[in-house]
Image 1: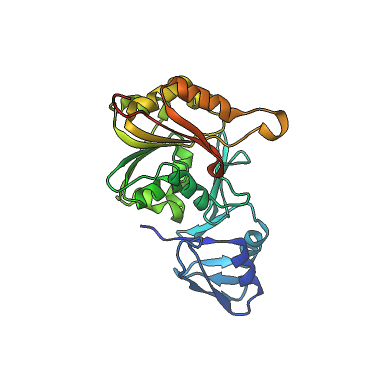
Image 2: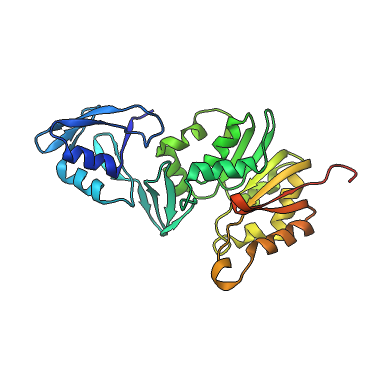
Length: 283
């Protein structure tokens, strides 16, 4: 695998303040490993021999909203511009931002802690099979797999996949473990799974305004179909608009889940979502 070094703003500042260089972490705190980065005149020497100029390190130190990485001797922003603007934000672990909207909760928490709360809502066990509907950077899928489950995770956006491939915190998605990545629109992909394929579903869709079909009764019926009897669902909803406009998106989600056949539908406050289950056979 090609070596990629990430430089966080705080570490860039440490290098600038140093006389001879400093030992810094270069994998976004995925491990505790540090490397010696030497100062040579007006540049800094990375472990693979890449020289990064002082002006670039100054730019990284000042830009707390974007991640920068070094690959193949060059420095890049962890960002992709196209129909939308995608970038990794230097939280630890990183979050992804699309057109200025963060795809993970970061206020009062971090993306990994948030993912663990979603996983805990369905408690996947050893040998179970889990559907993770909207991969993103894959933290939820990875955390579910660490509990012994086999996870199928679906991602529609190729640009999101590209950013996941360079993110060290997403590496387990692509290393042949217990996670299978499927590229496609989960609204269509879910129809290809057999009835009763999954012990649990973690549904963490984009906001309603961007993917309303993933909040529909039609889609919930598909999730119900692919769950085994007694299978568990967690649906991240958040609370957009609720604080200011009196809207209760979770209430509408709960009503549609019940219409689709789910029982035990309840709010999970700490994870900003809704839990439900498919009835056991004969119940």
